[in-house]
Length: 632
Ligand SMILES: Nc1ncnc2c1ncn2[C@@H]1O[C@H](COP(=O)(O)OP(=O)(O)OP(=O)(O)O)[C@@H](O)[C@H]1O
Image 1: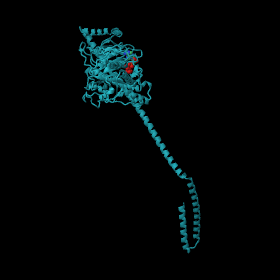
Image 2: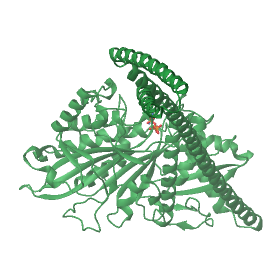
Image 3: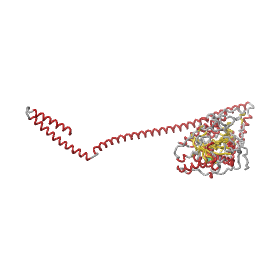
Image 4: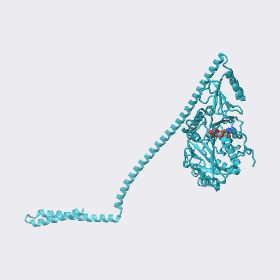
């Protein structure tokens, strides 16, 4: 079938910019031109339409010049004594009117093309909570997102080139310690898990027919390798509280209260023929991968995974993602004889949003989740900032998120083909949004403080006249320096900019400190609560032990007493017989005692000459006494 090929897959180049300086760097002397460093990340900015629900600020503080790479950020009057205009440079800025398809064509489509042709790629969204990351990645009931569009175009483009995986041992081609299942096996396992467990309707796999068909991308088809057949494997996992969980694992459906098994991120045990042991990429070990053969099968897998993801309502977003979600679309290429020719992956990552507990009004486990999210995003921000400055993300190993995002990029394996889409609400939370813009922008420039006289011009920026203000500022600095006064003004302005920049950096650091202190406090509180809980539990256990011992002792005493009693009353006939015998013996004793007394008296009355009789009487008495003793 002759289809039109994708138009213009070349990404826009990051434009050169004047007088710019990198985030946290000292401002460069006005007039110097700095070439931006080679970027591993293309960084795009998307502004979302503000709504009454999402608006936290009273006024708009970001505006974009349509079709350009720069956004302008103005400090709202209530935020600082000196208001400034900051310019942030991105690969491209999408303003509020940008449609899902437009964003897709610029950001994800080139990655789809690369992945089909054997090059790994990754697209991630970064932004404050509620800024539109999930909306961009997964769309909503009316519109498709990047994931659906990417899958649609992949299957449309590979159409006749899909291999019949049911006829080949696809497991043998996996080198990543994965559990590879075909679509029927996967849904078979899901259904038996659902039968065993008591799963709510919202967690049951949904049919893909509920996914909207707009925006329509039927005219987009990408070029494929003519000599290859393709197999597609889908996997999806989440990073929750710094641990990796498989979203396609069916076991939590059987018992939702059981602890989920966390997976390891490590080099696979088996070596692929494509990489040497040293170059082997790290993978999520033990991940389930589902082999799908159509767009609708792929969507069902993704939709099921999405229902298993950690999402909850906060004050800022009714369905706030509490984890970072990674969708991996793996494309395996085979020759016509079924020999593997290579494999490549496209990762689409929906990062959880940074949030301030004060605004999000989170508590308990949500606060702990937010702490973990903010910590990982802070490390990601620092990595991006150092990446823009030095071409290396210095501390990417210090959080699981950056490790998963960067380990295959900076471990000397392959330079990833990565796109970061920063989402922002122009009327959202000012400080958090500004912090993200500073970290992620390819370059930043503090143009000038807004004095009262120029406040009118700032108003013109906010009403869409950003280009005017831009050119005014440039003209101001380029024409100055002619006479002494102008030179002084330029010097003072530079000093002021430096001071402003230092002040902003300090403010950033303060924010970070505040954030980490809050997190530490939350962690400390959790730890203390856990200690108190354990102490209370220990005391109760000890008390229970003491009670048990006491009861045991009492029972023993009672048992012994009962035994004695039982001994006596064991056989009542025997007891009566014994009593009868005792009374007979007592009577006999009494008679013998009387006889002894009689004999003693007789002896005293007889004369000494009758000693022979006396001896025999003594013997008689001895015998009687012995008998008495025996009887008693
Ligand atoms: N570009 C947009 N156009 C229309 N609606 C949008 C846009 N971006 C976001 N929204 C709406 O704003 C709300 C919040 O967006 P979303 O859930 O995508 O935020 P998020 O950044 O993923 O937040 P979190 O990090 O808390 O998950 C949703 O109702 C979404 O539909």
